[in-house]
Length: 113
Image 1 (cartoon, rainbow, N blue to C red):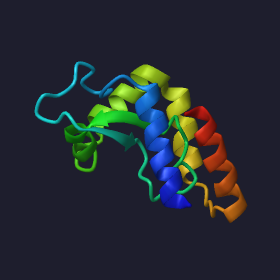
Image 2: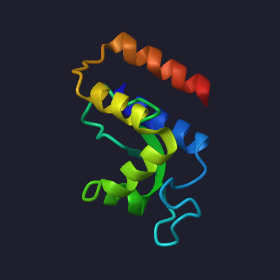
Image 3: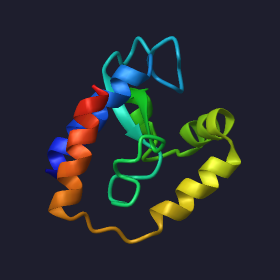
C-alpha cells in the first residue's frame, strides 16, 4: 500500500504541477519528471503530504540529496516561511500508517486523479 500511495502521489503531483519547480522551463539535460520531496520520504509524517511533494526534473531531484538550498529557496518563495516551519515540525512527528489509513489515502488520491 505504501508503494501504491507513493505512485499515486507522484501522479497527482505531475498532474498538478507543470514542470520542474526549480527550472520552470525544464532542464534539457534531464527531461524526466519526478516527484521531489522537500523532506525525505523516510519521514512518514510528511511522505504523502502534497505540500512536501513537488515536481522536479531528475537533475534537481537528485541534487537535493547533496544540496538542499535550491529546492528550499524555491519552497520558501512559493509557500512562505510559515508553511516551511509547519512542514518542518510535522516531519519530526512519528507516524506509523495503519492499513486502513493507507487505504483511505489511496482512495483520496485516486479521486484527485
